[in-house]
Length: 230
Ligand code: SAM
Image 1 (cartoon, helix red, strand yellow):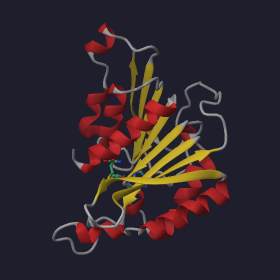
Image 2: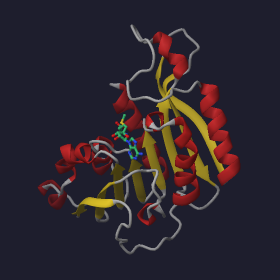
Image 3: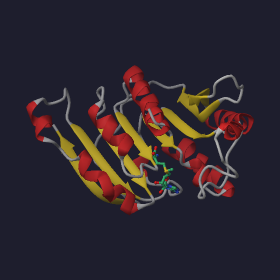
Image 4: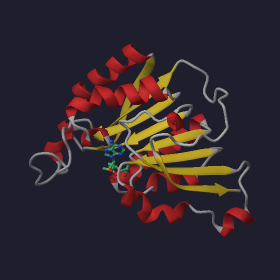
């Protein structure tokens, strides 16, 4: 399968294993990961997404709308889906209290000077139980045919494994998380690591700790759509 599907599959496997109830996808773009999560929800009750690009959210958001099949075969628990237009650089109270925050191929689009503010927002302000971050592994680039420079013109940086782990270990020290490194897309016969490197952060707290369930009206983000699925 294409690499983006492998990254999304990685998230699905994590959800299957740890059964988070509230999942937030930052940089959700056209909601493909959320759509896959809706199908393979494994007990998720709240699926939220935010992106700075509202048009991208609008493009395929209908795929998240309730289907007649949702009513014919209802899930164990109702599912709420919230899509927001906003930036992960802003502090938004609605983003607190999630069990899992996923951030797939986003950080490399930030200005390097903004990475610290991003880290503080996700780990210091949102304080989710678990965070999955994926980003290109620069050491893999020589394996990609015809590539010069970064993989995408909008990438502001691409980290080696050492750079990624230095950043990630700094997060653990500062915000009290532990981290495991993995990835998707392997090179044959070359020790360059994964094509997409992934860090899975977890806090030393109970997963699905009770949180206030009342719906919060966003203060900084704008709600693009809200779906209730039975
Ligand atoms: N996560 C998706 C996936 O797995 O396919 C899309 C990744 S796409 C390469 C990066 C996304 O991050 C874009 O949709 C972009 O608009 C979004 N993005 C970039 N900066 C952002 C920010 N500060 N806040 C929220 N989203 C942002």
